[in-house]
Amino acid sequence: MPGLVVLESMWNRKGQLLEDEPSVLPYLKAIRQSLAWEGIRVSLVYRRFYSNYDLGLLLEEVRRRRAFQVCYIASHGRRRTLMGIGNRVIRLGALVEHCRPSPRIGYIFGACDFVTPDTARDFLVRTGARFVAGYQKAIPWTESMLVDCLFLSYLLGGTMKWVRTKHGERQPPLREHEDFEITRSENPQKVAGQLYRDFPLAHDITFSCFTLDRRSGRPPELVNSFDAYRKSVDRSRRLVRHL
Image 1 (cartoon, helix red, strand yellow):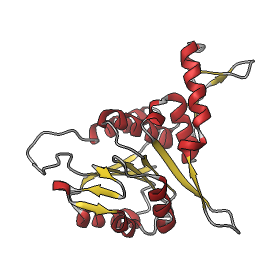
Image 2: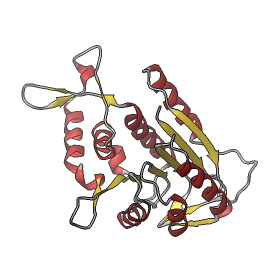
Image 3: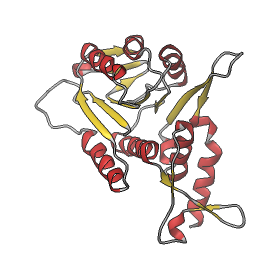
Image 4: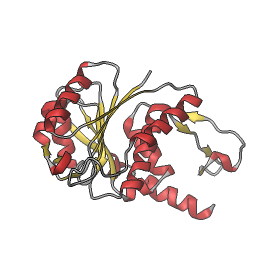
């Protein structure tokens, strides 16, 4: 059973605990339920964090438990920094220490400005994580939440397999068929490409998945889905225009 742990900070910048604010939890519960309908059971654990200290305690336990394959961290962010309650700073260096080592775990950050190529390289090299994904610029809350949900759904449960025509073009399968086939992949780069194909807005708001190509005999090379799948995004837009 795939294991997903979700760690969310407060969104109210002033740290007003009694103020109403959004949460990622209802969205992720819906994803878990939709996957369950398809026969895919996902173990979902949700916790709040407020500072570097309690985030560290949570991440230490995440690393110890073999049940978790994906860790989703949602908070305000800026370059090389996450934000706890009342704008408490959680710097990349401290986060790396909390996540080291993580060879079995992929990390997704729902945070503005945080997962740039230089941050991704530092994080992957120093933690050994399976992948890291997130956003290179400031992002809108609702749109990014939808992108994160689709990426997680595709990664944990798969997505519909498109139909290839006799001319080599791909079409959404529901256009020609009442039913559709599911294709699954554990490769986070391939999943990011599927996400861009189906939802180009993900590319527009700079959602990026990073892995390290660790071929022997040479330094690890950073692989960035944002650059690798530009042509796929352009092709999907052409398809939509012609529907």
